[in-house]
Image 1 (cartoon, rainbow, N blue to C red):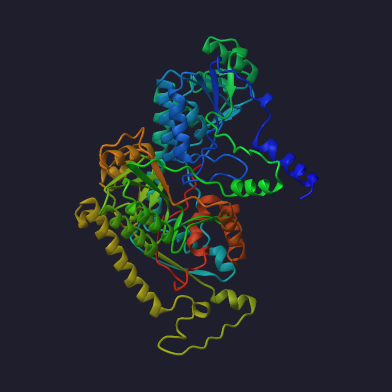
Image 2 (cartoon, rainbow, N blue to C red):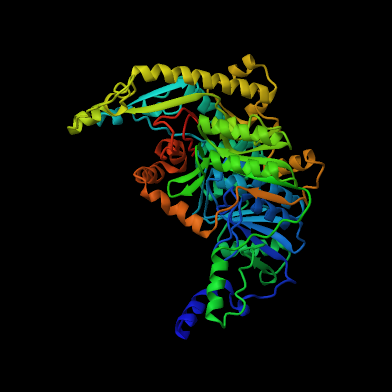
Length: 599
């Protein structure tokens, strides 16, 4: 390798891996004002160490960072950046940590050009909350917009045959109906009521104002800064330079006597070491691309198994078409935790709207096998419904947040009928088969045939009965009583606790503490945690991201995400994914009845 090429590589890498030392000022004597960006709280799953840089923090690591910040005497205040859209369960976890930091004496401040309902939920904690004179506070009551596409699909000759068990199991009704079913409307209103009541109560408590004032803000919908201040929703109106002065005054310091910290607790990048030898450079590059995680110390530990995305057979993936939870991957992770003698308890962290009934049951079985040797605690995130509840219901304990979406015990199948489509575009489908019903089962030509419909309906009833029976056994409830609360109905975490579907309220931290207790009264503060499945290395990440592009369905998945958002993409993931080898063209689904996007 020529010297000029080595110099070029070093010139590119060194600024990234080893910033100039003269930019690292030592302001340790100054109290710190730490900025927290809640729009960047990381994914749930274990994250690999990024090439040419430090490991990205996942959500648990971010919670631990907030906890560390609260106990750090060098930190005087936390500045919250404007943020939007954090789901209800994760929002509860973050609010708890910020509240603890405030109780520990940390001042919380926030300057925002505008505030919506989601942003105000967090900003309401601030000791100083300020917006500029031209800003606004927009308080739209939560609502959900669902698109019903039966007529649109009919224009191109597509008709969906949707089968379901339970009047509340309304998944895919938007493709088979023109209007919302009564069951869908009842369930949706209950969930939106929970979201509204929680938001109003939280803001009123944090701002120390009457609930009626928060409700007046929602009644007004759009408030000027002066109107928001009059209601007590914000503290002051002014510009950012005036905000900086008020923050300094709040802390009893001059503005230049504060150290502003943007990346509190950020991990340092790798050290390049000696690179005089160009061959050593290649070795270092390989190390950077495939960095090794630190070894956990010997001794008792707990494991966290992250189960995120739509559930399906095969391996988990994270690509352009979104995250999926593969049964093979999660089963292997649970078996690994089961066989690790140093793991004394397992937390199964679930964020999933459900998916394949078969894949869900395989994961449920792995949970039962794990429980034979150690306790398993389910920690529900924003959603653990249908198949997501299936994998949770057999755990020793189930914790959720009041806003978690869960339940949805039911089964659904959706099969597109393209017969009229082919006729409209001038395509004639000819079928040749041999054996019983061979030609009758052509769904491309005839849609869902009656012989298959009757079999599917019988299979769905059987799976539903199994779902109810396993849920009743796992929750120690009477099957008849539980079935009344099944029927595909989605419940909030608060409602789920009342009817016995979960044990109590709590986030990931509480689940870890419970796992430590049940695993032998371990100390949650010092007990090591093994995170599973193992994070993919750099090259595995590339394969996941780009491998899906060879699928004919990948463009459809990209369109679903682009125009429908993450919720729509996740809801359609089981149908847009390529079937695993040996799997039928249709799969019975235990999935959330709607792609929920609350605004």
